[in-house]
Amino acid sequence: MSATSIAVAQILVLVIALVAVHIPLGGYMARVFTSTRHLRVERAGYRVLRVDPDADQRWSMYLMSVLGFSLVSVLFLYGLERLQAYLPLSLGISGMDPAGAWNTAVSFVTNTNWQWYSGETAAGHLLQMAGFAVQNFLSAAVGIAVVVALIRGLARSGADGRVGNFWSDLVRTVVRILLPISVVAAVVLIGMGVIQNLSAHTEIATLAGGSQHVLGGPVASQEAIKELGTNGGGFFNANSAHPFENPTPLSNLLEIFLLLAIPFSLPRTFGIMVGDRRQGWAIVGVMGTLWAGAVGLLTWAELAGRGLVPAAAGAAMEGKETRFGAAASALFAASTTSTSTGAVNSMHDSLTAAGGGVTIFNMQLGEISPGGTGSGLYGMLVLVIVAVFIAGLMVGRTPEYLGKKIGRQEITLVALYVLATPAIVLMGTAISIATPAGQAGILNSGAHGLSEVLYAFTSAANNNGSAFAGLTVATPFYNVLLGLAMLFGRFVPIALVLALAGRFASQKTVPASAGTLPTHRPLFAGLLLAVVLVVVGLTYIPVLALGPIAEALQ
Image 1 (tube, rainbow, N blue to C red):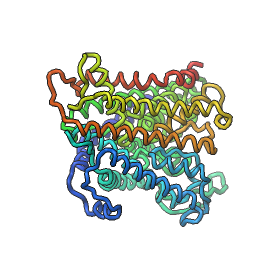
Image 2: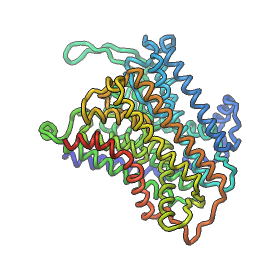
Image 3: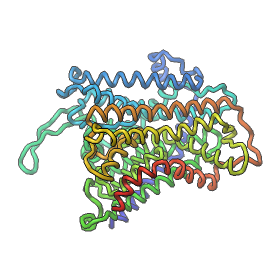
Image 4: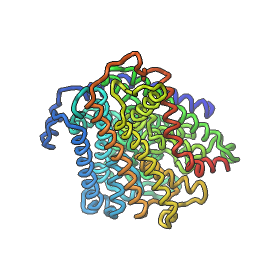
């Protein structure tokens, strides 16, 4: 088979699998968040946390719960990292330095999983299991809890800003959704060859007659939630390009499926919870169109790489695993940057200029195609409100969505959301390229050097975690600055989304009339697609023109 035929075949298999789980998984998640029952294990957890799972919180209290829980998580993980040398299963690895521990703690709690370190040399088994893997579950659950609060805000009428209970949403997400799917996925990955043990370094004989020390570890259990929770942090430095994490093309396809399954199913959950499943179909249609466009462009860029070497190899194979090839690497790269996963099975710094530009642009769209667990859907819903507002201005009517009026206060929150992440990205990039400490980490000169820095802050602020690894970030300057970008990039949008949810929950639902804009039809989906590309995408065109676009045209 040709490279193009292989690319098309694996994309079709992936799409069929995602379509197959969309309705059952989306419906199941809706039942999880609308059920009035608490499982026995959940009730035990509430007693430990000393919370009332039936208390209906106002949006401000919901936000305080999110922030308080995340602060405790950061402090706990920071402590584990600093004290690692004194803990069991440390493999003799010392604790992280203060700046590195800060960066890593913020990274995993914000669902970014940015890694300035090599997992083989910086993290022992206990830190991997009790620290990183636990936060993979919890940070993913926080994102889903926030979008569920926003959905309740749109679905409720005159609820005095009450959007549910954070602790109930958090526990249910972990116990009923993430944990059972991850267990099954981990067992399947073990069957495919991903390792799962508590071994330290084992000396093995190489084919050349020498010896090599190979690290074992609880990889499959972490790999499953790493992808399912759109986290992305690898057990090994090579991430999903490492044969212990991702040994075969089949495991590669499974990992891509896992990172897309929940984000593509959440629109179904949304449609059921607001009482109009057509709304979910419209949103997933736009998400799917954006994802398909990114996959197509990136695959074309890598298969048609410019130059004599790519032409001789049949594709741009630099930085790619020969086990997967350029097509599977492009599919993984497009999917991991369309979500907030950030896992990689190839070196993104080695992508063609056009391919690297696609990965950056995916993240700059806000990772809404389909985005991270929860964060992708609430980002898309914010842009739905922008589209409704623009449509209302065009026809001279007060804009409303699902019976909720969009007034000055609502659109102010939406505007702040749209502007917050670009401000973080562009300010961080500008500081880095204008200061000696920032310039010292840039490997390449010219357009590609700018792309390295731009990619780093785009990845951090959008809580993705992948990187153009040519940039040296294992310095106090980048650890602190990127940590701040991850922190503000996660919690400023969450605060604005929950405030918006409270505003909608306080409103009385207005019945649809003859003048109500239908937001479930293809015409509105087309308008939403245009809003995503124009309102969000054009924000970054000047800096993209100086980076990947300029490099591609050279």
